[in-house]
Image 1: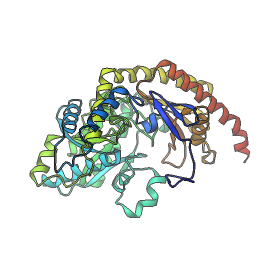
Image 2: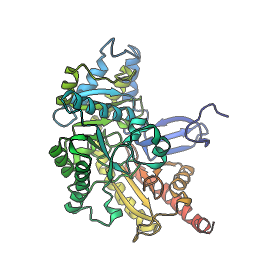
Image 3: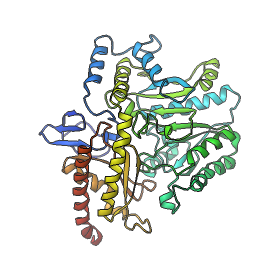
Image 4: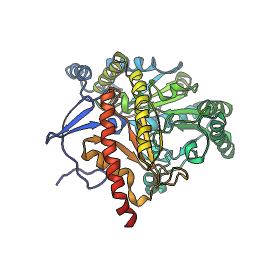
Length: 444
């Protein structure tokens, strides 16, 4: 028996220790963390530099409430983080996680509108499918039926446009016309809502759990920026999963000429060492809000000195060890291996990603893009089989959370070629075992 409960009744082994890309349970079994937890542990586990930074801070203080004190770690981390942002994004608001970061971005955008005489703007357009967090405000801008439908009476759902899933729609993702097509859906929605009512467009530069490492088609990001500018709509970039080097650049949006107005991030920023996230905004948004009486928002642990000391250590490791560059190199090598895996296993219908945010999607038919029957629960079966052989990967349903299956392969940014080979061995075992079971599943 356990007094804990989370999503269900399933039990897992007890974690004993973790180092680098590996984790061990109390029985001594070793696992390769092929998903960095939930795409969190960007610098790997138990890095001595970060542990030392946290120890030094613990000897001084572990908490200082922001209304009572400023703290050196929070000030230093804010300065260092602002230095990694696009020009002008230099005001930082710390939080403890991704959902809090998204909520903070939405609230800042709304308070900016109020402070500048644009009170009719309140609608936040997002994409379907998408995932932006589990609090009610974040769920209102999420499109993933299993997570949103139970709570729909409790929240004000926001408008959605189709995610740019060119591979499912039979469009060429390398053709700029494809990117323009999906961007035009945003402009159509803005016009339908009434431009004066639309506050912001929120998107992940590379899709996360809801779309499985979806990379936008050519021209999409630049066209989105132009549309937002044309209609006075703020562009909020959800970098919770893509930030802190995951895609081969510090921000996922750095790969395109698409400057955000607000960045929200978490996961890799604290890299699992402490709960940490941030909203980073342009000064032109923050100053009117402060002039109007202040930002009516906050969390108890915002700017916690211990969490910020961990964040400083994480940024130091990313820079010192060149982890953005390593993510780009190892990501290219991982994509080559995943394409080879696709050639071997006919149920893999698509491989995609950027840097070390990669995924493969399972399909019944590559030509028609038909998904496997939902009853097969293929994405979870693959994860479970990989876990049995000591490989941790992450999965979700691709098509609005009710059909389709994808598996995310996102090891820590310290991964080497040897680690990638080990990941492939585990995936091959999991896929072969699942395919051996398929005749029984089809006959059930």
